[in-house]
Image (cartoon, rainbow, N blue to C red; front, side):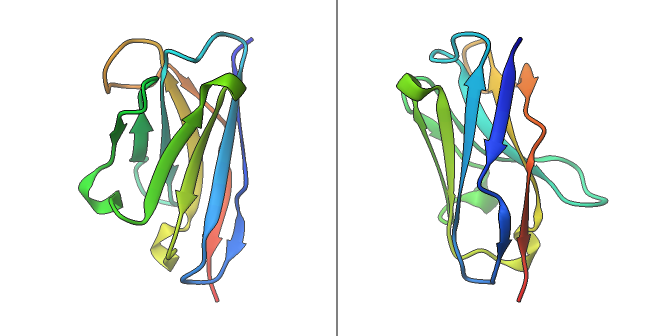
Length: 119
């Protein structure tokens, strides 16, 4: 059974940092494109960052600079370092995995971890 389990979310003050983790299990994800998305209440799910098995990263323009994705294939884990957080970053952050090569729609999703940025 494929599972993506996120952790590391929580409440943080504006300007603070968080590091999210996602552990993948149930199959070999070492060649998968892994990613992070987020969804705020009443808004569409949006891409935060993606990373290939070889470490090539992809960020939408609005996410560059404050978010850094990385992965440890030996641990089947992908990370999202988030710095200088703002209230508008408040959302559920979801881990994703894509079997095929290239940046495209994910095949698997985690359940998400809540990130709340508030003073």
